[in-house]
Length: 117
Image 1 (cartoon, rainbow, N blue to C red):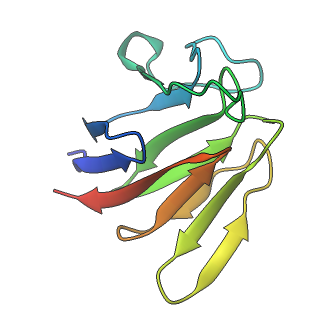
Image 2 (tube, rainbow, N blue to C red; image 1 turned 90 degrees about the horizontal axis):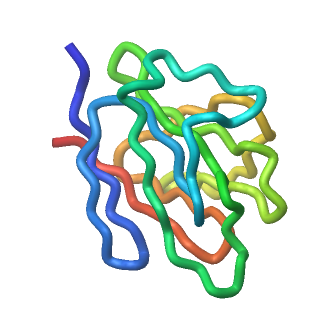
């Protein structure tokens, strides 16, 4: 059974998710080079960003066996995971990176904090 994760965004959005998704200014299910497990159930989370520091489809997310992951989709400004007490790590593009609850994911000038329900 899938876990419920909560994404608290810097713009005030709060999203509860149990599946896969794409985050960006204009997110799309059809992102070249990615395979979503179930394209009919992909969450698309739009983030307003007038500065365009966030790419149209900036990052994908999901979970596998209760572990949350993010994957930068080759964005111009990258994705960084800040682990509490352990520092910040830049994500390699098109590679899944595990995110622990309590961590913050930065993408462009935006971010979200991850927690588990």
